[in-house]
Each structure stands twice: as C-alpha cells, then as structure tokens.
Length: 115
Image (cartoon, rainbow, N blue to C red; front, side):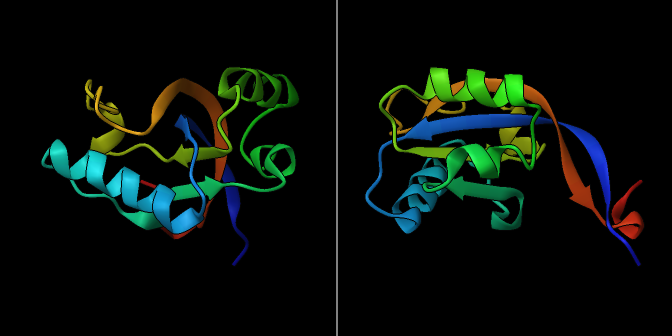
C-alpha cells in the first residue's frame, strides 16, 4: 500500500548540539518539564543536509525562512502535531531549544493511519 502526503502544521525548533542524541535528550527534557512525553517517531532531528531534508516537509520558500530563522544553530527539529506541540510553554526559557515557529507542510502518512 502506497504512502500518501497529508498536510500538517509542523512545529520547528532549533538549537546547537554536538550530536543527534543530545538534541533528542534536550527535547525529552523540555517535554518532561511540562509533564508531557515525546513520541520520537514524530520527531525529525536534522543536523546535516538540512535544506534537502527540510524540503521533504516544506515548500522552498518555507525552507529558506526556517534556515534564516535558524541563524547560527546547527540543528533543526521538526515535530508532528501532538500534545507537546500545542503546549504554550514549549520550549521553556530554560531549554536549549528555540521555537522557530509553526509552518504549513506535509508528512507521509499511510492511509490506514489517517482519521
């Protein structure tokens, strides 16, 4: 069965991390401080080939805007919609993550997973 692209409002964070596991750890820490959990299947940590990987989710103009907002940060985190992404305090002021915004994009979702 083929996968289909479906529209989604994706939350994008950034930060500076020496490895992907440290970026995941910062996200999990931020979620735990809000008494929420993270489904890592709904998270994409992007440290390399950012332009190409962001293009899997967003139109070229949005990719350019995200990279502009990213500034010197070396890591971008794309989050699918969840309880975590709707929390008004994500990320907290103490977090190593910065909220770049919520952007219209697309995700690949098997038809049986759609409501």
